Length: 560
Ligand code: CA
Image 1 (cartoon, rainbow, N blue to C red):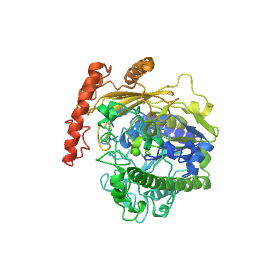
Image 2 (tube, rainbow, N blue to C red; image 1 turned 180 degrees about the vertical axis):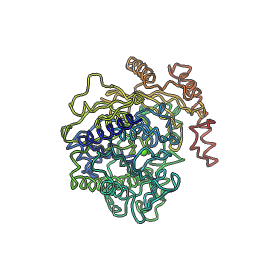
Image 3 (tube, rainbow, N blue to C red; image 1 turned 90 degrees about the horizontal axis):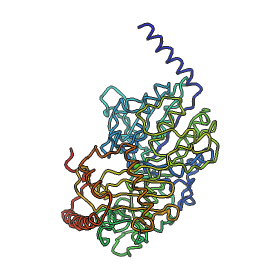
Image 4 (cartoon, rainbow, N blue to C red; image 1 turned 120 degrees about the horizontal axis):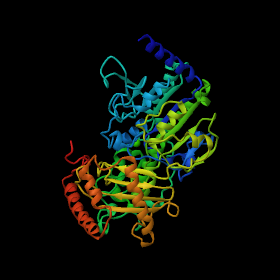
C-alpha cells in the first residue's frame, strides 16, 4: 500500500513538474459561426464584416480550408470533439445526445496529464461536465440576455445557478473565463480551457451596443439565393418534377410555406424591416432581400460581439504573459448556410454547413501565416490537443492528431484523404432528409437515403455528386452524367469502405439501414420507387400543413 501511495505521489509530482514545460490549451468554439463569416477565409462578407481578432490566429498561426464536422449540428459535433469519436460510436446521434461523466475523454486525459481543466459557456450535452475541475455552463441553449449558468455546488447538478443580470451572454462568457484565469488558475499547472460561445446561434440576439452595426449596409448575397440552378440537388431535395422544392430545407424567402425567415423575422426583428411592413406590398425578390438582410445583419452583429470579446480575452493573456505559451484554437461547432441555395440553418452536407472554421496559433512551434488544405475532422481536434499536452490518447479515440502537420508544415504521407459525414435527424426542425456522404479534396458524394431511425417518414432517396474543383458552390449535381459513372462508382465504393472503417455498420438502427441498402445501387426500380415516395411525401406534407402540424421529432419514429 505504501509503495503504491508513493508511486502515486511521485507520478503526480512528476506530472506537475513536467507540466511546467507544456503549453496551456485554449479551445474557443462558437456556435454556428460558419467559416465564410470569418474574414480570414476571404468570403463575400470579409470586407463588410471583418473579424480581426479571430483572423490574428491565422495571421500569426495556421488556417485550415478543409476542416469538417462529421454531423452538422450542435450536440453531436460537441460530442465528437469531447470524445474523439464519430457519433455512431459516442452515441450522440442527434440533439438528444449526451456525454455522461466518466466519458468526457478530453477532460479526463488532460487532468491525468497534470492539466487544470475548465469548461465555460455553451455545453449542450445534458449531463454534468463533472470530469472538468471547473465548469460554468449554460443550461441547454441558454439565454442571450441576463443569462444564467450552472456551476458546481451544494445542490444537485443543474440547480446551482449564477445569473448575469443586464449582461449579454458573449460578454458574460468572456468575463467568466477571464475571472477563472485570474482567480482560480493554478500557476503550477498548465491549463486546458474550453471557452464556448452561444452566439451566433439562432435566433440571433446581439448586445444592444451593436444595434447600429451594418444598419445601412446591403449585405452581399450569394448567387444561389436567387438562381436555383436546375442541376442543383436531386429528387431527394427537389422531389419528382421539383414538387418538393417548397418542402425540403427551410428558406430565406417564401419558398418553404412552413418555415422561412420571411415568415419569422419581421415579427422578431421589426427594426430590420420598413415601418408598417406588409410583405403583400412587396415583390418576392424584395421580400427575400429584406429577410436576407435582417438575417445576416443580426448574425453578423453576434459575430462582431464574439470578435470584440476575443480581443479582450487575448489582451488579458498578453498582460499576464500567457499568450505565447498557449495553443489557441478557434472553431465553430459546424458551419451554417448564410442564404446559399435559399437555405437557412446547418445540418446539410453542403459546403457552407459541413465546413468548420479552424484557426490555431502557437508561435513556439507553429509557423505564422500557414494555410492547409489537408482534410481534418472534428474527431481529430481532441487527439491533437492531447498531443500538444503530451497526454495519452486512449485507444478508443477514432480521430488522429495533426500536430506533426502543424509543426512541419507538411501533410503526412499517410494522412486521410476523405471526410465522413452523416446527419441523422431526418426532417426535424429544418426539413432536411437523413443523409450520409464522403468528401475528398476534389469531390463530394452525398446519399440522401431519406428515412428516420425506424425506416419511416420516407422522403425520396437520391444521390448527388459535385466536382468541387470546377463547381465550388455546388450548383451542378453530376451523379447522373454518364461521363462521371466511373468516379461516382469509385466514390460509392470508398463511401462503403469508409463506413466500415469508422464503424457506421448499420447495426445502430437496422430498419434505417435496410432503406440505406435498398437504394444503394439506385437502379431503375429504385428510381421509380423514389418518384412514388416523392408523391406520397407531398400528400403527407400537404395534410400536415393543413392541420398546422410541425413534426420536429420525425427523426425518431417509434424508437423510444
Ligand atoms: Ca451549432
